[in-house]
Image (tube, rainbow, N blue to C red; front, side):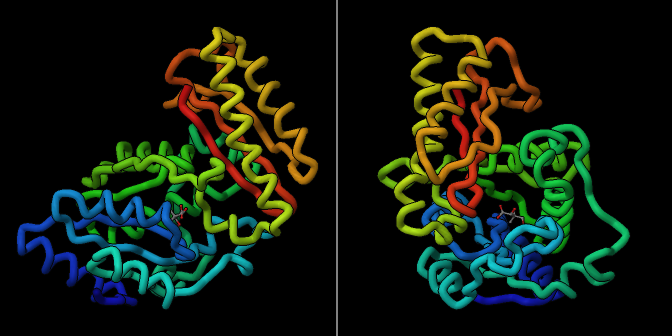
Length: 281
Ligand code: PAF
């Protein structure tokens, strides 16, 4: 496995792979890799693709009061895990490599429909940063496919839109969320929970489970389903609900009458850490 730090080296490596008639699969990450990322890597390897894992904590997707500085970084540990998983290359570029014109550079990529809601509403500029960096990664790595976890459901849908609208020749492969035994969705941010907070983190998955059970029992009023999520979160003293929404799974528009195939999305702070999760009804 190689660790690549520059754009020309990354492009050259992709060209070599493609000349050998192998596909290149990209797993974009911000590092602090965990079993959720491992699931992406394993799925990426299916069919014999050469897997590139990008490790880059992208400054432009963090708001001024968000955890960019505290975001966990350990490239050595990440590289060891990638090697163990049969990854061909880790692409770990610098800010200069990714933003040659500086972080305020004049060209950004913005999705203007799905990005307005939910995370986008609470984290202005977040998806602009995500789309911009993912577009850059696609240009640099030139992957045939790219894998995204369903935990970040809105991100996945926005990236799919970007690929559709900007005509990127990249197949987006969604991968199911990996969970701890108690239902907590794996996330690099879980590392920041204290033991007491970690004990309350399953509340998001419990709230989604309650909504699913109500839906399966025949409840179709989306506001009732959302209220049930909100009540469930209120029972955990360290948790503070940010949103609980039943939405159309493609447009992310809120619905009044829930239907099979809608998505339930939830975000809550547990202590200082903001967690998100979702479930398709
Ligand atoms: O999901 C993430 O880790 C990031 O948003 C991504 C897709 C790597 C872009 O920085």
